[in-house]
Structures are given as structure tokens and as C-alpha cells.
Length: 179
Image (cartoon, rainbow, N blue to C red; front, side, top):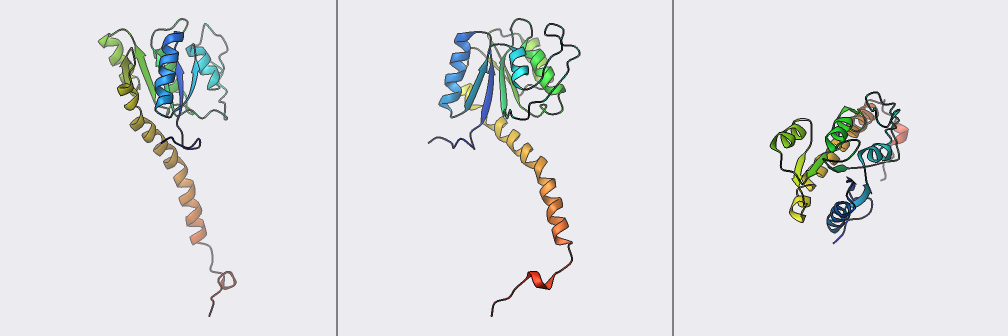
């Protein structure tokens, strides 16, 4: 049973290896995720609307958030040319508008210091390649937590509106009682 398009989670998959991108895309689609794939961290930032002043020297980026993009999770390879998955993670977590998007790092190299650094810097998970369906199944709780954060952020607005409505003066003409 698939999810409706509106309820479907959107995952941005980032990997410079075509084979690994195809594998992760297939695994995610099997789990009813909407998937967008890109082949570099820089293209991921561009997709997310973060435009870099200097592609190679991304220390002082000029950031323009793309309001049209709605990504619920980013899964990225660690080792990529030009910009690593760890660098992408740090950029996402430094962005006010993107910091709540869960980021998962994957790598074929089991390097404990690298894994710990990514987790300490905000990665939700670190998967060893090849990624398997059991790994993808671990993503749902992070997606649900992300979605509930989005709902919480809009909730105070709704509560304030209700408070304003309830404190409005009573207007006897606005209520009709049928007898």
C-alpha cells in the first residue's frame, strides 16, 4: 500500500557514484519515498537553493533559500570530490532554514573517528555501504520526527489565532439558535 503524493516523504540522495545513487534510489522508492538524486554536494546545495559565491572556496557563501524545495531528509555519501558529505552536513546544520532537515551519511569505509565526528556534528545516522533495505527502514523515525517539528513550528501560529478569536467580544448577531 503506497502513500499519497501529498503524504510522501521527499529524500535528496547525494552520491558521486552512479551505481550507488541508483541503488539508494531504488531502495528508497521501494519504501515509497519520493527521491531526487544529485551527483555532488555542491549540486545538493544548489538544489536546496544555497548558491555559492565561489564553488571551490565555500567559506563565505551567499545563500538564497529556494522556497519551492521541500526535502524531508538528505542522505549523502561521505567521500566525494570537491566537497565531502561531512562538509555538506555542516552547511545544512549552519543554515537557519535547513538545519532541521535530518541528514544521514553513508560510506564504504568503516572509520570510527569519521563516524563519530559526523554523528557529533548532527548526522542522524551513519550507514556503511552497501546500503540495505534494513538501513532504509531506520529512516522513518527521523522523517516522522522531522515532520512533527514542522507541525510544532506552525502550531503556535494556530494557537495564537484561536486565542485572538476566543478573546474577541461576543456578538449576539453571530449566533443563531434554531427553535
